[in-house]
Image 1 (tube, rainbow, N blue to C red):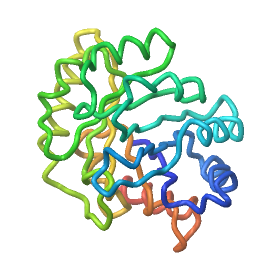
Image 2 (cartoon, one colour):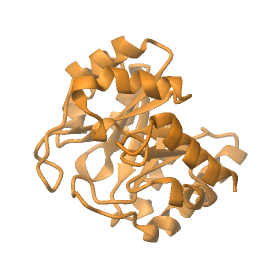
Image 3 (spheres, rainbow, N blue to C red):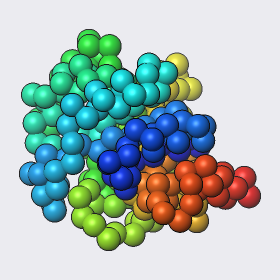
Image 4 (cartoon, one colour):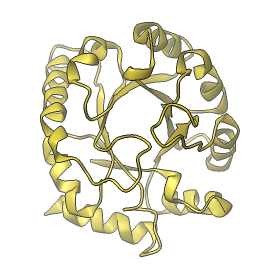
Length: 226
């Protein structure tokens, strides 16, 4: 299972150094959470294409960068994120009107396309789009709501996606990746890996003041190896 750091817990005054620390620790996938101050429940504003472009310029072409759009207008603004240099745009199924058109537009722009669903949204909301998706993200917390713990009740949904993706691959279809985000740390990383997760987004479990990114990643890897 691959680990992708969420930068929201980083000190933005030294964000470049933090990202380079992650790369030096062996991390190649960066997860960027974009909130518009409207769609998420706590009305948080994070950042937009300008910062993403700076991150791309800092890390260069080899890093893989996704953006998780927790915004109301992904269908109108997706090209701004592609132009800023992301490799993958992930949009909320709850916030788009025509997911098929968005996926097609992203692929036409040579960008990978992903869909994400909230903990209380059923897998059936995304399963019809699975053959065209590069990634499905299952939220294990409610987006934008602070102080939450990991929600193990999303297990059945994750396993449903894993079975559908494995069947799709067996039939020669797209090797869609399965990601989880929310409350993932070293103590539950092996649990979600067992569910069939390909990529785990880790925020405070990786970027914190308790240890370096390399030390925290090593703790996660030890848990995965047990």
